[in-house]
Image (cartoon, rainbow, N blue to C red; front, top):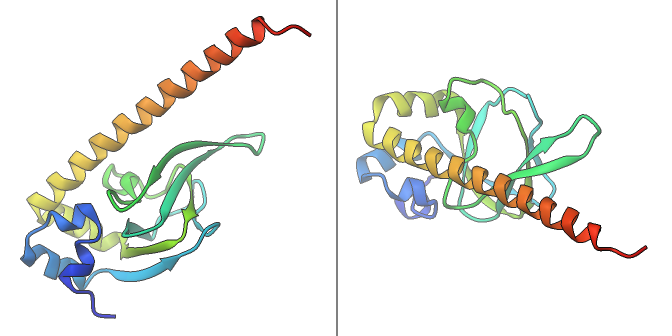
Length: 160
């Protein structure tokens, strides 16, 4: 499938690139459907592709030893899935599952790392996104902790 610039602009990060960079990226991505419940990557599995969603929702889950899970973050058309690759990792520390059906641009990891090293603007865009994602994850952790404190406090007033 030929990817045109209009399609690439459906992902916020890719929309920030120049037309020359979008032309380079368009040959490295494939538009793929994603469906609710699809597991894109298991925890600790080697990542072969990264994803730039244009619709739908990707969910990062931390899998607990007891088999439970905790939501780390959700990623939509404002971001991409595959941050650990840019931090020197080869595996995804979380399970990635589709929470809302849609489409995404799938890019092989080797293309991402090549473009990340060759394009200063692409690198800067992704670094800013990673900073925003880390802030979002931190805020989620604080909110979850705060909610547990409120629940524990409320449980102390329960009459059994």
